[in-house]
Length: 273
Image (tube, rainbow, N blue to C red; front, side):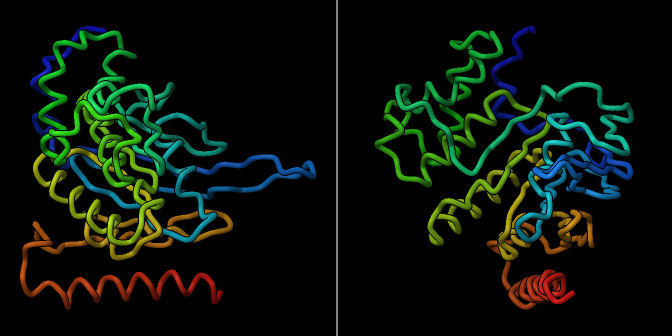
């Protein structure tokens, strides 16, 4: 694999806005249970992901949100239906993907800068050529002065920011975030969501973000996919047409809360049915 110009790592993606990056067509997934039977984890999922879209997958525990992420990038193969990448059936695991997990999974024997540069090393690229880009990414997340620190010297929120920087260092076409703020306290989680919103507005990556938090989903999303459980399926897609930056706009409170309450009622209806 050839080195990509390190400067690209600090620039917004060049993908065509609105083009379909991924399409799931009537996707289902089964897996065996402990008694020799079959459990249907996902059923008849139809979904499109467009370039530079911030898509949030929202739903109760056990509805298949994380499973859906794995299917989208080829970490799992569907039992039924198909996954298309740029119009072609997905045959292998997507490579141009950054991932942020619930826990940052930083290597304790590496500094912050070294952790950010880890994907560059794993791809066999020239690490020295990407140091400047790594510093720029750390600066955008408020971590410039911590580049030489060890993970143990950082708060939980700061560690998660390092995980986000590490996912961005290769300038991936797609960023997957699987409940990245779930382990944080409420105040830090709110701060991280605001930071991610600001960062996305400056870089416009294609993002799929899994969460249980309805306000977090409304704050971040262009579009929300609400999933229903047993078996996991898409119950509704909701476009969030509130203007950005949402944190700086006055007069959005009523519209914001209207979205939150409508989604909350929808999810509560699953429990009553």
